[in-house]
Structures are given as C-alpha cells and as structure tokens.
Length: 102
Image (spheres, rainbow, N blue to C red):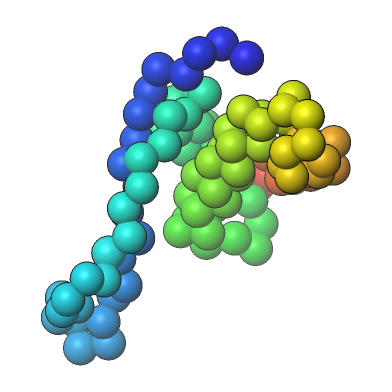
C-alpha cells in the first residue's frame, strides 16, 4: 500500500434532545491518515436500498477507517488485527460492493 497522505480529523458529537450544545467534554476527535480520499468515496458512493443518506455516509467512512487500520497491521506478526485481516478485509470489500439503486 502506498504511503497515505490525506489526513482527516473525525469528530463525534452528540446531538442533545433540546437542540442545545452539550456541556463539558462531549466531543470525541481523532486524527486518521487515509489511504483513499474520503470525500471522493462519499461522492461516488451509490444509493443503497434501505439505507438513509446518513447511514450510507457513515458506512463509507467507517469502512474506510477500519480498512486502513487493519491494512496497516495486517503484516505484523502476532498483532491482533493481523490474525483477523483475512476475514475482515473481504467483509469490508462486500460492504463496498452492496447492490446499489443506480
């Protein structure tokens, strides 16, 4: 795999029932070096029957995050992710190839 060059900041923030911002420390932020352009993947993602737009976007981003992490460790002897890479990566391929509504 080529050295990834695109960095993303991923934020997860709860939406409060009353519409107000949460108080205190309520946002999770992480940095991720992506092997593929997440924006292009989202733009190219087909509509999938039964999934909302938010679900589709979440699936595209989450699939790529997991793929990148597993691939980074797939060749590391003894690493927990290396032991499951052979199962996880084909499953992620299947998610990327779900039937579309196009």
